[in-house]
Image (tube, rainbow over all chains, first blue to last red; front, side):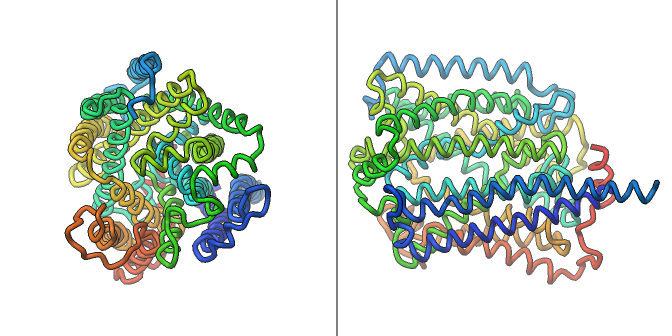
Length: 88
Length: 524
């Protein structure tokens, strides 16, 4: 497969996953900025809501990193397969 | 702080540090750059393995300020300090999915190669990128040298020895950067991580053990010790309340994320990886190391609030850099943990400044000095970068000696703001917007730099308060001290505006790589 095509696939997947992580992160940061009192609410054995909610962007980010690698490999493999079939 | 270490612990710290320096110099000479190759910039033959590069990159993200000031910030302000750590981690996650692979695919030696390949480069952009990178690296070097100089003088028990400590450490780091190149400094970084990570994890485990493994008890004690009560895990301890606090908070947490996307030393290591696919593996190792490290640092910070919060409060903000050492003394009366933590501080400072010196040297040699002349690949890249690294390291040590008594918070804020507002938007635009042009890159780099400087000049850092640079004057326009909420959008806006108003904008888009660079990228 052409270098540019692989690059296009890689950037497409990266952008989608990256935007998802960034949006979740921005929502979390906006909450910390606008409703600090709510983030300070004690919810679980001394842990505040803000500290617990931090697990959401972290989880989305870690999932995104794993998904990114799998999707890029799968799409490049599929594109290569189609290329091989075309020339067979 | 003169009683931080007893005489035997002090001897142990300096013995370990001296042995580490000697071992690092040997490793740099053995594994370092040959004179006739360009391994100072990038090693093609004897490359580090993926996991080694990943550990080295994780070390690049962790400066001595992370281990001292940030831990102190967690101990005294709670949530805001943890927010900075979280922001840095999310920045690494975004770096892995957005930047690392395409950067490695297009850049051959430095990040402006990517701009050339994506159609938004040129010598003017290369020089602009180089100058802004130096404006990021140089303050970072100075701040780290001052912090480690202060810690070393306090450990020696002789405040007058600070200048000598800064000069010695500055000279050692310059020697390591010049002799080691990208491979040698990578080995130094791995050695540092092999010592720092276990020590910090042990400190975190000891903190948890002290509270019987009960996180609730630890947090209650931290709330009590920090003197903030229930506000310990509420935003605002450092950034303040009201709209100024909100703006500071967004600027601090989001700005940290953006800055992590474009840290020069991390970009340098990402470019030096084996392949785009290899860069992904490297990134995962880096992420694993940082999750473990930040987890340990968070527990150490909260533990410090619980165990030595009162001491920290009474000693004031200047004592924050000693937080890990004070905690070590509270956890272990024998002094072994304090000695180990002191070693970690020294090694972190040494390794981090070595890599930043190398990144600054490579940028100065290849992007700033060579961009205007007839640039030749190979030996000249290595030679110019070697001399530039030596110059940068020695100049940073000299400036650190002069500025040792200044309030350096403003300098730290400046380099973080520049990284997030000028370098990161250019990288992201160049990768993901086919319409991005060289003019847009120039507007973004110079414009965002100007916005960052102006935002700090009109803030309380410059005037209007007793701790300002000019306390006798008052020309501040706002009370915001962390201007990321303005500078980052301004950087993106300027990049977009410069591109859409460019008459020479290519109709076919800048996304397709140009012929020469594309061919080179495929060959690799």
